[in-house]
Image 1 (tube, helix red, strand yellow):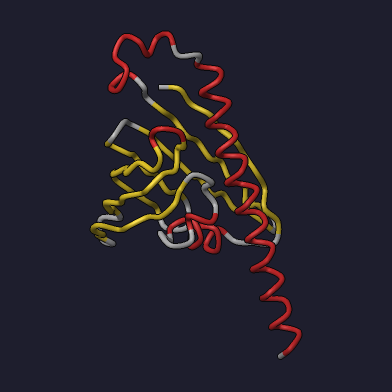
Image 2: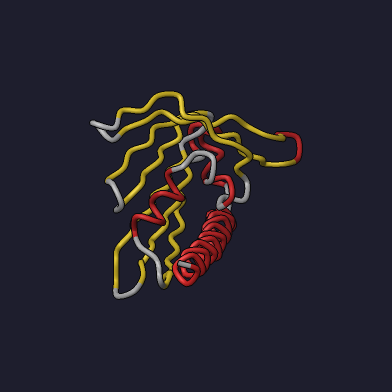
Length: 161
């Protein structure tokens, strides 16, 4: 599996706010650049598991592909999404409160062997890792911006009261 990990610190927010943004199938498309939409197929809050379908824009001949997988979470702490089809992709978000903000560790991994078989050995891992890293960096940047907007809206409401 080819992996990329990126970290960010977002000030003046809480793990709950970030968890809410990342766990909402409607708002997650704002943060992940290739995600066009997401659908929740089933959800079990007691087991903290769900089945999710995402539609990812990959461009070229592939256009938009349907990705189905399993979502699990620990409330306000972590989110793990493992895509089963069309190929294994793993995304993991870990949220750790620190001072007046939250440390975020985001990991994305891609297994090309099921699709390419032995040809996967010829794929330049560094280029794929850089592509995954770019996706994570974009997502973290968008998430940081959104959390700043939410914080500003809350401060404005507090002043207005």
